[in-house]
Length: 519
Image 1 (tube, helix red, strand yellow):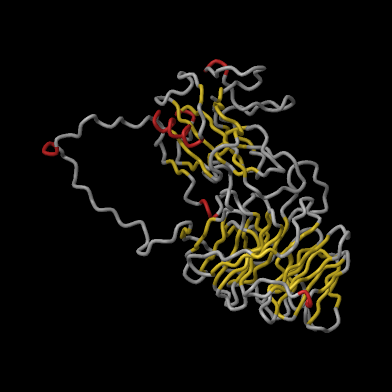
Image 2 (cartoon, rainbow, N blue to C red):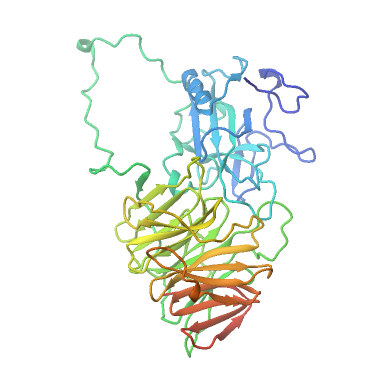
């Protein structure tokens, strides 16, 4: 039996109403006043502190990317059963007549765990009611997803008057979990639900209108298990004109720039697409700042790119012109357009997804290993014919390439180990570099500390086996390699080089961190 204790108790004791408190603030920081409006510490938006009493704070139980609102005693019992907890709670602590119980199930990184609950907040701008959870550890956080159950009691009178959405953070959910938020209408939880009558009323005395048949909510053809379909993915249009010699380049300070014509004889002035935090700045605590991890290309005048890795699900973004706002598209790592430019693929540790940019639907397949734990995903690409995807993952056997069909049901194939061990210090960076002119999948193995050689490897698109005779070595200062057909880009000591076929390398400039072809 798990005995709920008050914060600060020296020995386990049964929690009673008298010794419950809101989440404890650090000793040198006064706790936020209930109902106070102040920046929430995550994104600077003003939010309101919701008074609450903590039942569970950080137990490694329950699902991740999940929330629950228990509005009745039966729903509370169902919650404890879901969390597989046998709780000893004073019955006066939770009164369904005046309280609701809320469970938050965020995904925690094992190397950057959450600290104690700092507050429960409601952001009127986003509508989210969420836990404020400080992140410990860093710099550098693994992207595994571990249970971190937080359960609180909130008085009905302290809930927002307007409609709100219960979620694990003040951010939109990843594509895997858009249906897992709980939307609460204005006043819906102000009073407990009416108990069901013991016996149904006499139908002859009923004055209620005849029930109407609801519209079907499932597709005509059922989707396979583990596959979901969502709509509403919208990539904004922009005014960027694409040329055959253009590149997108992440500068050394982290900002993403567009360089028109840089591969040609008459380049024009570059312009900044997005401003990011300088990755060279020291990180005192918490994870390092997000960095651009891939540029997919241009869709209807907007550059589609991704940054990583907060939140843990990653971000697919768009820039519609110079110094664009941060336009959120969906969750995921290393977004990539198919050869026609009509479909966008992305993946993270929870799902692989394909979006049809012409008709709108998004199909996602959940990912998990044999232990039902998230998969460590490092990149994804389309094969040359656009019929399938190849994903780079890591596990106990090191790095592997795994194929997926490019259309529903996004069926996974057999993963092929590539013979490269995972380095937990992250000095070895492994990534999908692109697709060669013969369709081979290019994989870069970059040793950032110079302790081992850096190589570009080529894997057959059908068998995913490497052809060692094609392996290309790079200097110890290399940090980024990209391949498109018979062309290559790489960064060595912040200098950007370009090569076509077996021709000479050409220096394009310096002060750069990574570069991507725009085709």
